[in-house]
Length: 442
Ligand code: SF4
Image 1 (tube, protein in one colour):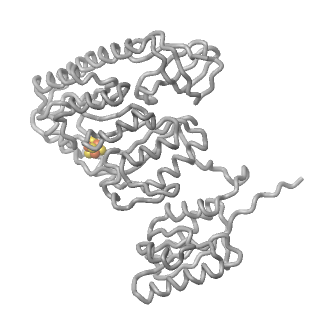
Image 2 (image 1 turned 135 degrees about the horizontal axis):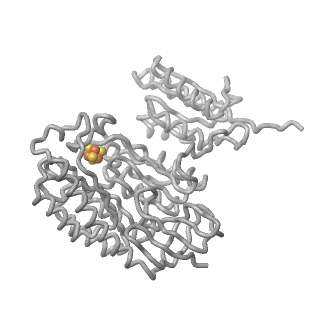
Image 3 (image 1 turned 30 degrees about the horizontal axis):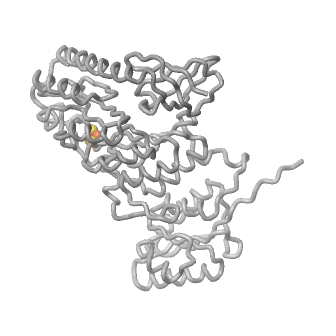
C-alpha cells in the first residue's frame, strides 16, 4: 500500500526593495525549502506569507506598509522581515495581527519564526535530520554554544584573531535550540562560548520574547530560562566578573548545576598582568567563600598555565599557596607553549622547559591531593548521578560535580538495569584521586 507523505506547509514571499533584499529573500527561501517547506506563488495557497520589506526612503516604507496590509487582507498569516524590522513597533501598531517582525539579515530569526508559526509535520521519509540537529555527543548531553569570538586579548591566545570579537546569539534562538535538544533526549546542557560571562554585552539592549515574556541577553537571565528547560545545566568558561555572583542563587534553587568552570590560568597578580587576563583576581578567594556560603556543594573547576614568560619561583609559590587556600575541586594544568601568532611569544624571560616540567609536576601533585581529600569527604553521601554507559552488571556515570570528558566519573556496581541518560541517586562507597565508586539506590 502506498504511504501518503504529510503535506508540507507552503510559504508565499513578497520581496520588495533592492537586489540585496532580493538575495536575502532567496537565502531565506533556500533555507526553508531545504527544511522541507513548499512554496506558494499566490496568497491563497500559502500557509504563511513572508513580506521582505525595504525602508530606504519614505516612499519605500509606505510601499512596504501597503504590501503588509495587502498580505494581511488576502491571507492573514504574515511574517515581516527586512529593513522595516527596525520599526517593529510601528508595524505592530498598524497591523496587530502580524505573527512576527524580524530585521534585515536575521536569517536564523525569520526561519525560526516560520517554524514556530507553521511547524513541519514530522515524517520519517523527509526529516532525515532530527529537529535538534546532528550531534557528535551521546543523546543525553549536548553542548550549547551561546556566542562566538572574544573581546579580550590574552597574550597567549589567538582565538580573537581567528574568530573575531564577541558575537552573542539571540536568547530566544538559544532557548529554542535548548528546547529541541531536550525534546530529542538531552538531559544535560553544557553551555559553552569563549567567555560565557560576557554573553550579551553586544546585544544587551535587544531583549527577545520567549514564552510570552522578555528575556534579556545576559548570562543570569539565560541561565535561569535554560534551567526551566533542561534537568541539568552546566556553565563553562565563566570569568569571575562581579555579576557572576548573580548565578549562584540559581544553583542554590536547583535551577542550574552547582558547578562553575572558571579558567583562572594563574593567581599571581604580576603573571596575570603579563597574561593580560580579563578578570581581576583580587578578592576572588573572598568571593569563593561567599559562593560556598550560598551553594555549599558548588564545584569549581579551573585550568592553570605554568611556566608563562616571566613567571618567577615566587610567582609560582604564590599560585601554590593560592590553590591551597582556594581548595578548587577540579584543576587542569598546562605548561606554557608558544602558539604561532600569540604576543606572549615575544615576552622576555621565557621559562626553561625543565623548570616548566618541574612546576607542572608540583601543581599536579598539589591539586591531586586537594581533589582526593574532597572526594574522600563524599564517601557515605548520596549523590545524583547521570548515567553515561551501562555494562552487564556495572555502569559509569557522572555526579553534578563532573563534566563529561574533563572531570571524574562515578563507577557503579549492581547497575546493569539502568539506561544511558538516567539520573539516579547513588550511595557513594569509595573514592580515589579523581573518581567515585557507589551503588544506585532503589
Ligand atoms: S583566553 Fe579566552 S578570554 Fe583570553 S582572549 Fe582567548 S578566548 Fe578570550
